Figure 1 (cartoon, rainbow over the protein chains, first blue to last red):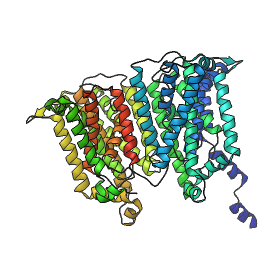
Figure 2: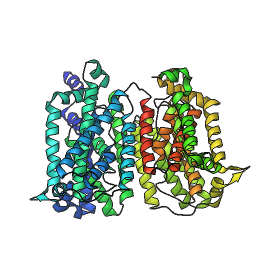
Figure 3: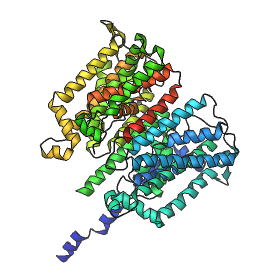
Figure 4: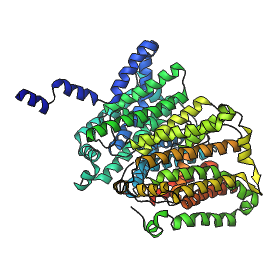
Length: 326
Length: 309
């Protein structure tokens, strides 16, 4: 008799394990499923050489995702990556600013801080919707850069960035190393620092965090500045990888990063979320795009996949949220 | 949270900015661009803003219930692709059916608990991909009746004028002379109170998303007829432009406050800016940037309670 009561009070180990497995980020299952599918249908894609190539493609996205996931955990969103990447590519490659490479790189970093701070200002002080603010920022940046590039077209990437984007250390591309080097300190920082606790608290319940004196506004400033800085870093990798500046660079960075963050198990307002899930999701997305290309669905198929992934993942998390609420 | 001007002008949201901005733009352009007041240019402005006006009126409906639809630009593009791709006799019904499906998908997703921006952002991307998959570049033949409907003139007035009048009339009747209109304002003002008073949010919200997508379809039909060609990226600017237009017109994106007149005034403001920059010889890319600045300005005037998305 008492045993039955115990069972009701504490679910059995099987159910607990199942619950834990179910709460894992969708990206883990997605990646596993994709790899299995590829093993059956397109075994060529699983050669180590190609996997490393896909990993290198995923690195710029993976770096951008770090910033995006920070914003999303704070119930904000940064869709300005495309505009930031475009502007960074222009600053670095057009020769518009006649400075040596390290100075240009420093200017880009300052530019990232400025854009992040402006975004955060509109979002926190004027309480405008973060989506609208950052999309308007894309309109402004891409409009200005496109207008300027009629006067001066983008040229070759700086030597230093091309080296980082195109060289490998042994097997590993340097780009991937940069990704990991950006990822680990950020993960530690979010786990160990007071700021990380603030992020958890605000994400879990913004109103409670605000009333208990968590510096909400300052946290959002920090998140958006970090987010724009990671976008700048991601643009560095892209510009170095491509080898020259372009007006289409990083155009789908924002949406891909949103998809990766959602797939990676970081939910709006759940306060949950690690750094590994979104990173795996970034790889998963790039793998999907390569798979789509190998099936013959190019750019349009990519966009449809992006849209479908964001919608399905968002609906799935909304469903989980409703289950929890009941 | 209503601003002071919103309280003064009631739930129409019309304030000094919404009314003053187009007047100021008009005066400035009349003073600095001599050809601005020519009949041909006024007709041009009317032609240029018609599609945006139709989309903005659809966006207004969604904004009134506190939602937002940024997929509407892709709907415009996809409509254009459908018009030139399917059997001419079925083109318009097929496009309208498409609008209903997209609207239902958006509306159902939102009522399921997905944030409207995320839901419509994803459908925007999906539909843009679909349009490009279907038709890689601009081209195709547009059915003659549609070209006629978009380009003819009657009683000395161009077709664009009649499209505008019809769209404004339809939106006004819907909002001000039906129960549906009252319900929208009630739900947008406070969904919980509306629910307690027996007005359930589900069906009217769903209808708003469907109507907004249908507005995108109508704008797409008009635009395809005007440029006499299908174009899979034609509608891309409309998503944010329509939000900018209604925000400039005093429509509160948090819902419950807004008016057809506001959407019209906001659209005219944007149209005058684009036209003015053309006349003054400014790069069109700068006018896109200026739209961004205006969007930032307009939504900064609307203080919300929440911080974030």
